[in-house]
Length: 417
Image 1 (tube, rainbow, N blue to C red):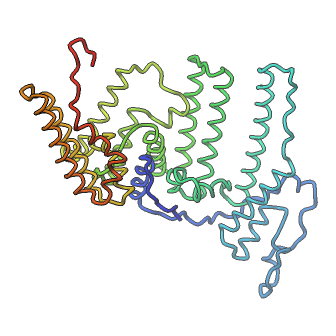
Image 2 (cartoon, rainbow, N blue to C red):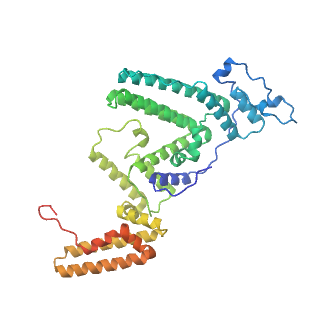
Image 3 (cartoon, rainbow, N blue to C red):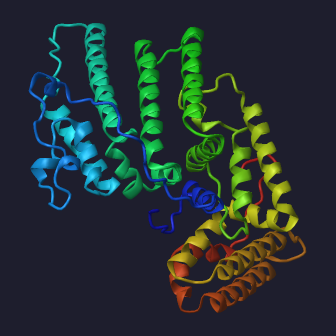
């Protein structure tokens, strides 16, 4: 079930929502994998296997007891649960929870002992050994889960569906059995990249950058094998949207864009900065001129996509004055057309203010009169649009109205105000 779609100001989430609606909804397929080969928890190898009979061999007319279902052999345990018709999500939760308890209680690693007289390099080396052992245990745990269920799963994936909205929107289109492998790959390669950075204290030479580049290539290769081509393209698009449009100022308020537009805009943004790759290795030697060129190309692609009329709306959405007005309109549950009307009234007033200030034929008294008339006319126009919200507007984003009574200062020939 998808999470509730509440209004979120972050454009990354807005774009991801559009991408989701552009993607045909498909429910995760039911897992029908055949029972995996017998595999028990390591401690169970030292004890006698459970002698409880399998429910499939008991009298069909009798109701199986929990003692007949539960087993120390997690593969058999999962099979028993499925035999009695237990829903797959319950099978998954029971098995993953049981394996998790075993690994956290039976073979929990003792904290690494780091003598205070050890130097920093030795402490880091010992910490890496400890982290490596913990990683091995996590891999064993995931292998046991996969053998028991027939697919990989981690209870943290429940958080993806139910708690973290951005993660949900990135991974929520994938079937259940693919979520854990994908997120596990991300964690595995992130740890490897962090280890490289730590070893060199964040000071990368060409050799280190080459290692990070190989890590990124390996990650993308593994993910592309795990997912089918459609899933792979979709995941890349969502990761880019989540990264780029939360890191950069980009707005589409009151711009009529459809799902296809959102997907194309997201794809265009990769030429400015590929967010998935940047997680591993940041582009270097990119001049400010090159960054500006990329941004200009990106903006031109957007305007070509939107066409003349919508491009005007797009440029308006990037104006902080419009965004302040739009935020006020939303807080007061007023229609979007009101935000546009108030913004256009402000623009017209500021244009007239500059014209009055530049008119040298006006005396100071005539100029002050003209400004007073402009302020009154603009206030009346905005008040008519806002109604009862007008006074709150004056106390908030409408404070700019006071500037209409003062002509803008022209710079002196020397450049000082």
